[in-house]
Length: 102
Image (cartoon, rainbow, N blue to C red; front, side, top):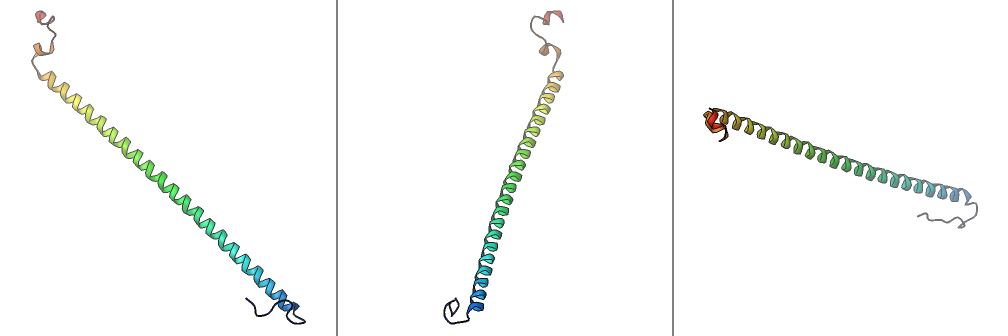
């Protein structure tokens, strides 16, 4: 990228030094950029993994909540059924062999 090389003219040592220093600086900046890109991608992966975990836990929570409400409904249905069965006349609740005892 420079218009001169290290051997182009005499007393070019300072230019060679400057050129090598700038090339080293350029490589360092490129390495730093690659490192930051890797860090950025790692943080993105971590972020997406935590999002997936969060959504999985939300799904699990809502599934358990639905199960809880379903069991509550079942319990209320059984209590209502029991309540209505107790409202029936007594012979309907007895077995046939115990009916004679009434």
